[in-house]
Amino acid sequence: MKRTIFNEEHDIFRASARKFAETRIAPFHDQWEKDGQVPREIWKEAGENGFLCCTVPEEYGGPGVDFLFSAIFCEEIARVGATGPAFHLHSEIVAPYLIHYGTEEQKTKWLPKLVSGDVISAVAMTEPGAGSDLQSIKTTAISDGDDYVINGQKVFISNGQLADLVVVACKTDPSAAGKGVSLILVEGDREGFDRGRNLEKVGYKAQDTSELFFNNVRVPKSNLLGVEGRGFKQLMEQLAQERLVIALRSVAVIEAALEWTVEYTTGRNAFGKKISDFQNTRFKLAEVKSQAVMLRAFVDRCLADHLKGELDATTAAIAKLQTTDQLCQILDECVQLHGGYGYMWEYPIGRAWADNRMTRIAGGSSEIMKQIISNELLGR
Image (cartoon, rainbow, N blue to C red; front, side, top):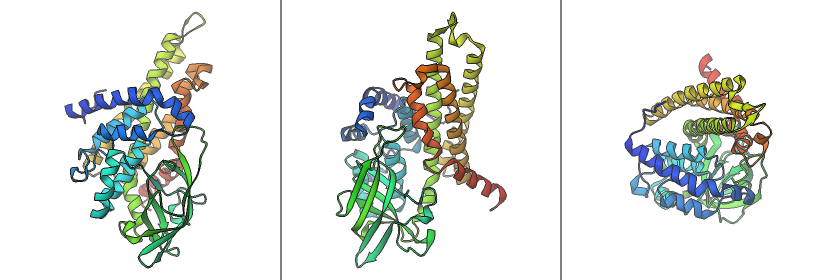
């Protein structure tokens, strides 16, 4: 199906992004999975090629282009099954916090380094006792003269081992629930800031994911991102884009899984004929193709709305819910069509099956998406 939201300039960028993904990411991803993280050099290389923080304005060193360029790079990285480099987190989640809420000093200091890949960023929200319920976080940032003193713990933090700059969700007013949450920038070399072990996950093995510990970490109040006490609202305002990114990546993985499965079933024989000649196989592939086309059309509509600033939280939640739920179902079907080989780590379909189960959890679980949708539906 022809996608109508892209122009020739986007197509040229996609060709460049695809080449980068196929030649500089895919051949090395297996080693990165063994290492448990990607090298810093690949971040700098991505920055040098203009793939990071595409929407950062030119005055802060960025390309200053529209979000479609960001979407293209997300899709091409997902298409090769690369889950290690969390470029999308850095570019489409952290950078927008600085763009929308940062002071001029913060933007000038940090955005050019994010664009170049010289600084790797992360966002620390989830805690051992507070996952999707961000109002219940326990990490505190208590005012002390011209500083905040931060104490607490975060978990499941992507880019946690490599991050030079972390956006930390803290309680500046522990008694005020959501209205007491603030976002504070914490540099990776601050005294009292420690990284726990690189967590061993079922999938996403090349992406460093860590516990973070804050023990009397003192940062200047100039590190406050936005307005004190408005951190929860700031997080909510940016979640639509995060969920759109997850939807974009999910559809790209579905399309890749279909390609891998067609290639496998047309090249392998069973009972004297190709696996693709069995009616069950043909019907399963037809179902996947139909789902992929429908999801792509809807997500592209969400993309178009987002470009106009019209993507609302409920529609983003629908996109995230449907694409991730169907992604997991489709990957399971495609593994089945691969037989025993589908369960082997050397096959991309097996890796995708293990990696993408987390899409129904990250960025707000499927249950939270249903809550958002039902609240809007019922006027609550």
